[in-house]
Image (tube, rainbow, N blue to C red; front, side):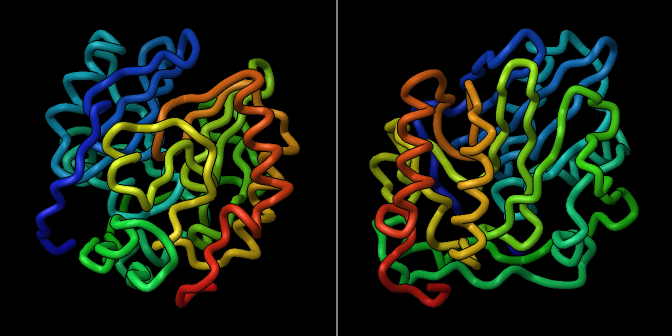
Length: 269
């Protein structure tokens, strides 16, 4: 991945949110990393914004009290979700699980489409062509998620294919407490607005416009996740949401996706 200056941050940088007794999120500038704590190890979902490794390790140690990394699950491979993965893997070689359709962007085969600076949206969308779109190569660590929806070493969790933002995007769900890890299938901040990203103004929104490749699939993914009736969600960007606010806003997004999430113009529309 090419070195680029990415001066984005938010007032939530470094904040830990406790989602349940064993699940926590850590905000790395503008992106959430999820830590699922087990008896003697922990699992990461995504690895955060680039160059936040030291922050992440410090916060993970605060949460896990020194437990070892067991594995990494990727919701997708965009630069802000796989930042630091090389450092995690060089420190503690671990299996990385992802959807087969995301493999070309994780095994050195392909780069993602360049972000769409022409898409309808705010300032972040306009400057998005400066964001990295390069894939990575972690082929030696990469494993496919099972087609039956089971999640390795996490028997209470199921994964769901939620394409649209990327072709191999996934989300994770635990039925016993209704906890949803959505990735960027939808987010809880207006991700194309620089101000709302900085202050982390909480509201359910569609996936980030400048990187979303297939809006028809993105809509179906939101409809699928809404049908699960989650009780609490953590998304790739934004604060956790729960209860009535989540159910109402997510239902509204699912039923009015074309009007409120899909942009009126852009190269992927």
